[in-house]
Image (cartoon, rainbow, N blue to C red; front, side, top):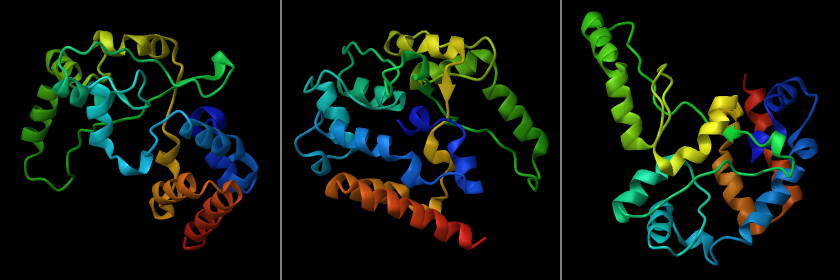
Length: 211
């Protein structure tokens, strides 16, 4: 939701002091609370695996989750027919981009004594047939040219990739020391928007002051 409602420029604006969470994140906070009304009656009493299992059992018709959950859901219910679509954060369809980020990276240590072997291993993993095997298993999308995702469970996302209607995860740009996950959980429990937005700014400023 953050990624679509604030876009790519928020972090740069926050760094330069042109905006704050107080100024820019109110709509996001309000919509986060609104979403709670459509979820489980006991959202804090269930974990990730509980959600996957419940959806696999047909206990809900929609599940606000990423494609990474599909393999786990399929383990619980192999015959389940699943469809996906980008989360409609805005009523303006043209602004709703698919939130997509890099999930797996292949790297070689600069100090390894096995540079050539490591390069051969990465070359092997990046062969189209091997990249296709990986994304078929994980229901993911590949950056290898010509390797396309065709699984019906995620076919509803293909148009976003084809049109370049993509945006990165907003929290990829938040300093880890902010502990945004804990701030978000506290907010959804106490539902105090003013306190939440203020705390986001306070924690951001704390991290920046250490630099």
